[in-house]
Length: 211
Image (cartoon, rainbow, N blue to C red; front, top):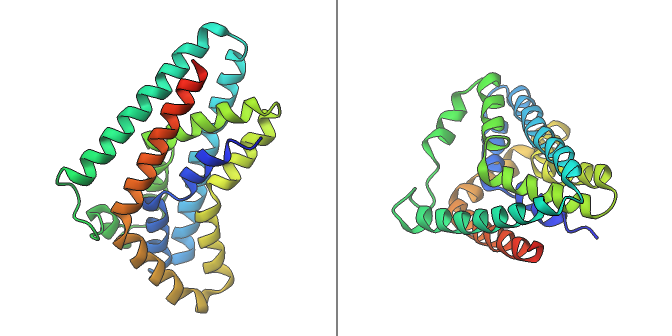
């Protein structure tokens, strides 16, 4: 009934936006930059999801549109698995090392924080594919708009929770947020590998199911 939860959780636990928010919340003007990142992140998830729901709703019942969607999902799954494996084992970023852009984010302002959130959400092929899948699955529940809203709320839950914890418990949150940031940076490669493989296989199987 809630098949859309799987792609929503895939967006929610993406390591890079979580690590970016943790970094912002540990620096100067933490709340302002964190809020800018959060607003852009929510918009970057909600707007494409709404667009996909509207588009899929118009195509609903059109048998000619089912096969291209299924083939696209299978191709996206294969491509995602290939990209993840190449990045992980093809001499990419050293395991446990923070990307250069993530280190530079510590000196960024609210505008760059918001721009990065849009880059990691609405302009991220993996997350866009998850939003598309979530939208299609939301429509299959028969209550597409409310299911899509649930998808968005789950997808933004981790980033929202981090900002909320920083605002509500400013003193106590500092140490825990720092520990989470180090954990996310240390295991970023492993988390990305596991998520990429799971999401890629999921897309492939869902595409085969639609054929």
